[in-house]
Image (cartoon, rainbow, N blue to C red; front, top):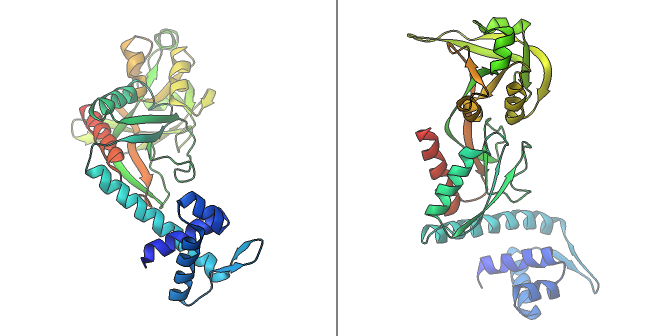
Length: 300
């Protein structure tokens, strides 16, 4: 009898809570499911389930075996799905998450290009600044602007996301244009609390010979907010100078709502990362989306 089938029968019984429910969900007879589990216990030489007339209970050995077996079967199923995806055009639902700053016109373009290339895939996009648990919430792929520190995730760095200093035309007319980042210590600033340094902004001078030594400027201002989009909008209202990812500020600069300042200096930039759970085999639809995203970032 197939080892995988007996293992799958045991896991299904535990998940369903009874032999009858497992048989019904699996489309097998209760006798067959019972035989599979009994064969597994006989082969292993241990009791995995304690059976009573009213309920099933895992033995201590059975609980340990269930945890390992369920994870192994999930990985095996993911591998088979990935192989099937490789043999045909990507299809199904791709569940994505991205922070608000990335989930704008740039991501709209990427999704449009992807769906043109993969018309059999549907996108389920969740825009949130929260670092969600990808496995727990069933998300296939996350796009992030900071490198995750979770060892259970696979991380692919796709490209740079430069940070630039901006202010509104009205603010500059009222307060003048800063000539050096150190001037920001005495000017009102709009702070993005997503920055790991918070209100300690880091800069490097841009020179023909390369980037200069990094230095830090402590800033303060009327508002802190954990959204680069809200930073952009508040800065456009003249509340101060801000550091904003270039791809978030670009349209506002083109429209004349923001002006780039301190062009001779570079803020410590972010990078764009594709992230997916390491326990899952990379499916064809995830691989295809990451490729389109990486190509779009290269063209940027």
